[in-house]
Length: 127
Image (cartoon, rainbow, N blue to C red; front, top):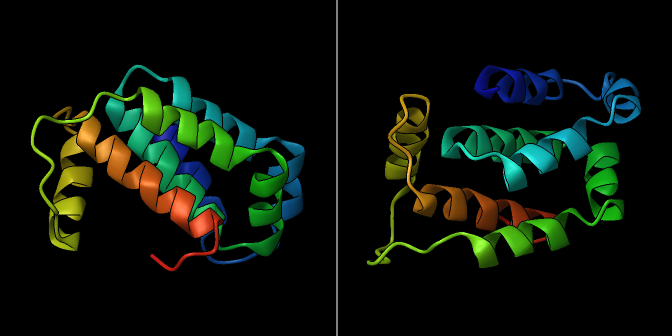
C-alpha cells in the first residue's frame, strides 16, 4: 500500500495533464481514506506525502477543498495519540522519519507532523 500511495503522488508530480484522470479515478478520496483509516503509520505518511504532492496541481487542490479534506485530516490529528514529549524537529529529521516509515519504524508523531503540514498547505499557509 505504501508503494501504491507513493506512485499516485508521483503521477501528479511533474504535470497537470493527468489531473482529469486522477479526479475521475477518485485518487484524492482514496489517499485521504488511507491517510485517515489505515492502521499502518507508514501507509498514512505515504498517503499524506502523496496528497501534499498532488496539492501542487490547482485542480487537485480544489478537489481536496471540495471533498472536505481539511476536516477529515483535522479529525485525524485529534484522534491520533500524541507523543509524550513534543520536541521541534528539523526538516532533516522529517526526511529521516519518512525513510524510517518505509522500514516500519514510524510513530504517531510523524503522522501528526505530515498531517499538520498538509492542513497548513491546504489552508493557504506556506510550509
